[in-house]
Length: 261
Length: 197
Image (tube, rainbow over all chains, first blue to last red; front, side, top):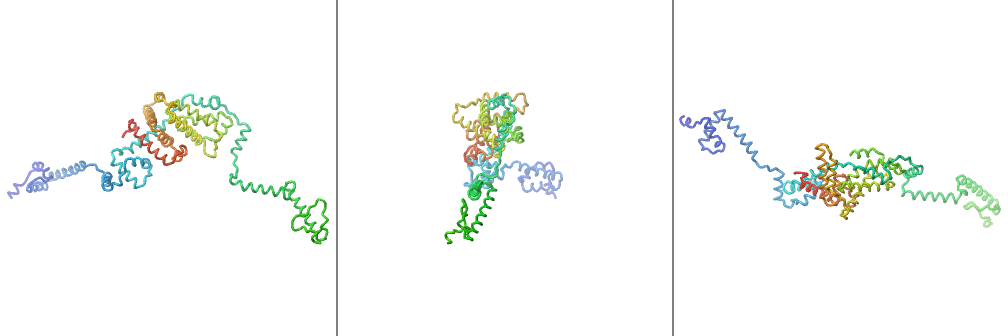
């Protein structure tokens, strides 16, 4: 009982020994006494918990900011040195990176270089800001200098006072011709032209004397009549009596009277 | 930008048809719609107000003479006209690069012009204009081939294929020049403290 009383500590002693207690720097007996006081005294117990939590927060704050990407990049740099990208290659891929066109493998090598290389790490951000400045530059158009509009008119139409002119008939026709859409394209014209030439030869040289469609039918009737007449003559034996200027109609209907004799 | 919106609503084919027929008002309308845009494009390449003015006039003279070649079926007027203007301005820029003695750039005059243009506008407006002037200065420091690609891509917002068509160089070259141009411009602007880390 005496030894227990002897080992008891009060609250002020607890506070004094607290740091050493948490660092486990006290002797075994004293360490036990401090722990025993913390269990008995609710105020000191609460204080012990507060200090413990504060220490955890402080430890987190003090840890170095080594992100996983950087750590991963460092590990890969040391273990797979052949995958390391060099500055020149990094710059060559910059636009593709910004446009999102980099293949996955190159993309990861590119990002690792961006994280690790002090020379290049700020370059993408700088280029993006530079492009943003270009947008401002693009939007900030200069006004047209005074007199330029008039100078252009003077040098093109010869006057600064432009007048409205109604287009002449001839220019309207030229414009109409220019806008005319021919339905058949040039390569398709060859067979069309051939068909037209063939039709011309047929109508002009074979049946129609005057080239008209009416003439075609008239001539057709005349030829049919002659053929019939020649056939009848051949049948009756009068093949030689062709009227003056009448040619035998070519084809199978004409029978040579001489050969029949 | 207002001019851009306006061009979307116009009937380019009708304007050109009237202008071809000698209607001065139609031609004046075309000039009004596109002169500011073409002047600004010329300024981006020349960095000189005087040179940009001269170049804009030359571009419009060429456009006026080639109105007959405009075909509404091939695309709208804005596309045709800006493509023509772009080609002429880049040709002029390349020519001046080969013959530096012909350059008319005068940065002092330009700076004064900017100050005059600012007038008594608000502080933010002034800051924006100052930033635009600094970006122009940064772009001017780029090598010619990078400058052309950066302007066409990041200012004029042309696609890679359109830049290939304008410059007549392979797509891979266009891409690498844009990439290199952006990086160089960013480094220049950082040195000028226009952009900060």
